[in-house]
Image (cartoon, rainbow, N blue to C red; front, top):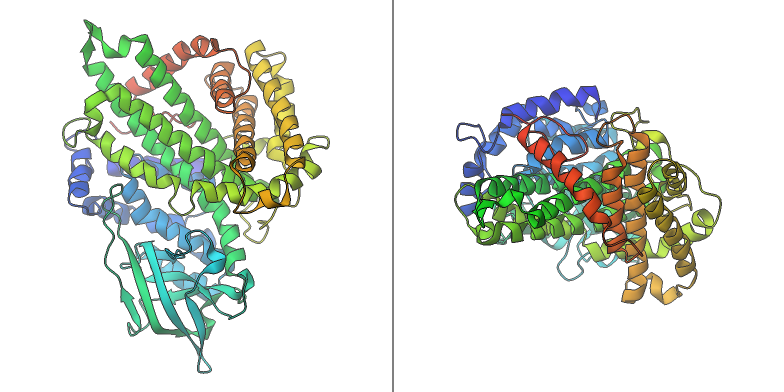
Length: 568
């Protein structure tokens, strides 16, 4: 994290306060009360508006504060740690729409969107249609010429975040009758400036998780927009989305890691307060093991997501596959960790009031992170046809190391360039190539880590062979489960490389430079990937990880890689 954003994160943390304290500006009780009413936290939105949170979604060139993706994710995690509904509904939904505008909009369109966000207005991306899910090439909403100067929108979109309260919409629509993705464009609909004739907001969808989120649909019946409302060249809507998805798919698990942080904090409070068999629950070895494993999972997700976020700056031509892998692996690992923590809490995990009630809300809110904006299986389908290209052009050749800045917090990065982001892989994969150099570094550091690193190098070689056997029929939406498993294996190798390289490039940090956490992380990933591992290895790491976790809990510090102070 850079020095510039450190000050902003400190200010935001102090503005929101310690949610466990009854006199804090935004308490757990306030968040839970809004959830029970199926409302967004009004107090939370007021505080974020006071902070000027909308400026965090706007590039510096247009008067905002968005400069680095990793800094933006660190700042957003402070909100998600308290309330994922607030994080998505007040912020991330606007970010999803905004990145498409910054990627393809004219200077005038960008200035207009920036002005709305800087004034605390909301944007919404209007993509999904229930009939077609994540298959955007089959969308039916159309935007066809209406006179010389306008387009008329027709059709219905469903389950859209904030669509009813957004001042502007980014609508994916068919602008040509020809089949295929090149007939689809993105349309910027400025609801704050255009008449309401021809657009109808549909009723809100009630939800189990993120109850306060404003999910609804919209019906277009000849709604007219200026012909110049198209973002970028007509017919390039999906191409723009594929570039933007690299930011948003990376961002979702990175921000949602804050949910696991609070889930761990709630569980630590519970285990410190309760006694079982005449001793504190926190002293039970089985409980400490669960807590240490969840802590390790948080570090894995953070290492993968933050390295991918920095690679979007440093290696933009290489991140189209890595971003989908990050969304796939990160969301699943976070949810699995929260489910395991729920077993530690027992009956308390579903209690909706009291000191630990925030846990049940977080668990419900986290589930949509696995499919919201892009389902996990859609991420696998995105990755799969590109893996044979990586296998031939990158993995089968001498490995190329990745820049150290990708793995070091606060290191200088090139500016973000949407134009440099590739919509399909060009065959480079430095992020897995870095696995080899990191494995070599383990040889003199720790024999346990070296064995695990060597196992992942072998797995990458085996993955190269598996990709060579994939049939053309396995590379599309109709892929067999065995083919999809190849993409899942790639995500696991990528995560292992991220963890190893964070350890390799953060050797000056007392915790991250110690091999223990990396051994624990690779051991968990190896077990998930069904690689041969020593089953007793985890027991050698958990005590040290639990000691670190307990020290951070007592010292009011975050459980992620940043190890930041929290308000008290």
